Structure formats: structure tokens, C-alpha cells
Image (cartoon, rainbow, N blue to C red; front, side):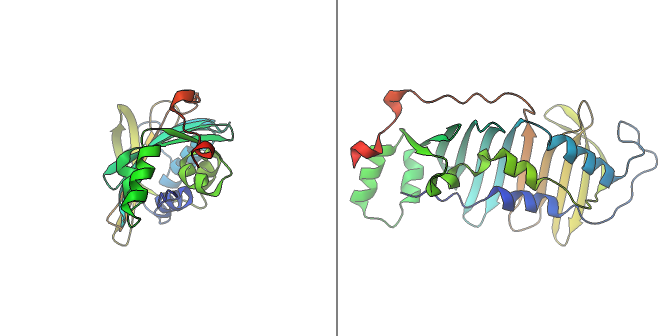
Length: 244
């Protein structure tokens, strides 16, 4: 069975940063750590700091034509990763990646959703075999690569690199209790917002897009916090080679 995640990191990051390309003016009365800096300067500073991390946590909530996607992943440059994803408001996939080995677990709802159109007997057999159990595969396997796109921290950070970014500073806000500066830009019907930490290191804390066909919110946290990814207990792993 092939899991289709219907989303790629490259597409997501390109979408998130695409709105920060038009000019804006800033308030001359602004105070705080970014006073005197233009919107583009703040974004460039935040991009440089965020793309320099060795690990981070990403919380994504996105609405697509195929339904709502929610994902939480903690990834490291060393290759370790843990995460969960739900699609269409139901069904869950869990992922643990240690080096080049990936462990994936699906619940019954997701297995049935991904198997729509197949004979009922076949679907029931898949559910009986896989629901709630871990499978093991190589990160290089084509089907596996789809389920670990959010584990590719190097690729994710690369797509955050800005080129001639510009944004309008909108004022102070708070993200998960951390003071932040909000920057925003409107492109057609779509409004893009980036919140940059105004306390401590100037990390990007949140990116949102509203008004377009695929509205989304992406929260970033856990910067440089070690990712603990451990192999699941052997009794919970199904050996697909033996089941064939």
C-alpha cells in the first residue's frame, strides 16, 4: 500500500515565503530590538538565524483540496526525526526516523482512507495486518520518502533561504508566550504573515497564509533542541517479508 501525503516541504516553504516580495514602509515611532531596521532587514536576519539551527520542531495546520492536513515533526540535521500527521480530519500516521531507517505506523482510519476503491476483503486484510503496528523501511525507498518529507531538515532550511525579501512591519504580537514582531504582505487575495521572536534569538516563530486556496499556519519551535528518536519495541513491529 502506498501512502500519499499530498504535500511537499518544497511547495510549502515556497508558498510561505512567496508573499514577502513587495515593498512596504515602517513606523518611525517603533521601539524594541528591531527599531531602526526595515522589514526586509528583519526577515533576512530571522532567516539567517533560523536556517542556522541543527534541529527544530514544526507544527503545521493546512487546508488543501484533499482536506485538512495537520502535522507535528521534530527533525535534526543528523537524520533523526519523530512526527505525526493526520489528513482529512481523521486518520493518523506516526513516524520515527533513526539515521537511514524509518518506522511508520498507521491507524485504521487512515489505512481505510488510503485504500478507498480497493476490494473490501483486501482492505480488511491490510487493516488487520498493519493497523496500530510499526513497519520498517529504508529512507531511500520511494514510498517511504513521501512519508518523511518533513524529516528532511536540510531541505526545509534550504527552502527558507530568502532572496531580495521585503515585508511590512505591522507591530508587536506574542507566539506561544514569546514576544514577537509581526511582518506581513498582501499579494492579490492572499495575505502572508511572519512572526519573528523579539526576545532572545530572532527565530521565525510562525508563518501563516490566508485568503488563498490553501490557507495554512506553520509554527516553529524547539530550535537546537536534541531530537530523541528511538526504535520502537520489536514486538510492535510487523515483518512484512514474513507476512507475504
